[in-house]
Amino acid sequence: MLTGTLLVLGRDVAIPLALAILVWQLVNAIADQVRRVRLMGQTAPRWARLVIAVAVMLLVLGLVVDLIVGNAAAVAEAAPTYQRNLERLLAGLPELLGGETAPTLAELAGRIDLPALIRNLTGTLTALVGSAGLVLLYVAFILFEQESFERKIEALLPDPEDNRRLRAVLADIERRIETYLWIKTLVSAATGILSWAVLRLVGVAFPEFWGLVVFMLNFIPVIGSLFGVALPVLLTALQFAAWGPVLTVALLLGAIQFSLGNVLEPRLMGTSLNLSPLVILLSLAVWGSIWGIAGMVLSVPLTVMLMIVLAHFERTRPVAILLSATGKVEG
Image (cartoon, rainbow, N blue to C red; front, side, top):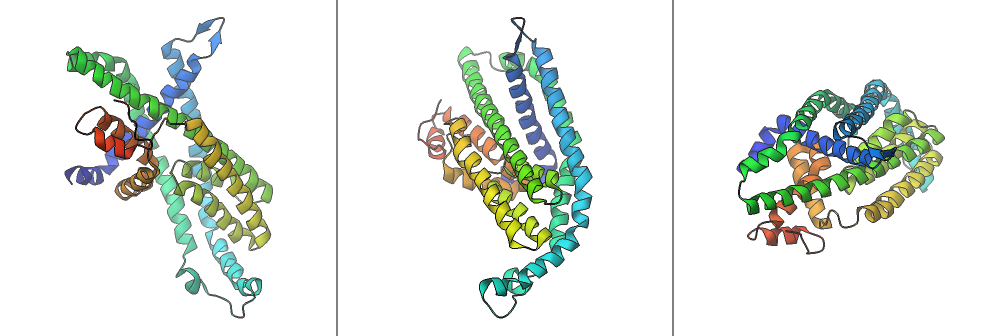
């Protein structure tokens, strides 16, 4: 109870810190990939690999911020037009379904205020941009601290066995989270780019912005891919007020999400996570209720960390087994 209260009350500090840790892991993952590149038979020194990785992350974050800042206001301004097109689309449903009376917005989904919904979405993305500076500051300090982390472990745990166990836990956490982030980022990027191509082909407004939204939604397990299809389809319907483009976008985006999220990603991920699907759903609900959208994005990494820590202690090992997908945990 106390832990949950602290997580809720301290969310303004805890969420940027948790995001910074994930970005730091991703920086190390990029640096590890750079290490595999050899020039004249030599690999770049560690400091150079980190500089390259940080430069890549800053470039990507800069593009994301530019897309959000450049499109959020324009998307919000287009919301009233979407509202009118939604009413026109619903007015045509009786003829499409063979009915006699036109269903109203209230009959179908209660009072829908599309401008308010879109403002909330763009406001959330803008707030994310606002916290990017704090996240980057945390990442910078973590990168500076990681060089002295080994010495701190030695001083903290002089006993060789305790030292070995802690290093094993940290190495396992780092390996699994790094694998998850690397694969998830690549698959999400591919999903976002292909979604952008489909939206641009059909002629949907702001395809770059919605491709970015699909990319970010893909980090949310289970429901993220559903919203990654539903939201662009809804926006297509609101823009064109015709069923042809809607069906085209729905079929193509559905095929992209299924092939990448349900076929390619599980093959690449393998058993690196080893989380039960039910546990993923429960962690999504729990962390989402505590930290909102950020909690949904962080739910899988946080639960993996918890399972690994629990697996390394005899008293809590049964809990780790229940959280796992296969019933086999390391520790």
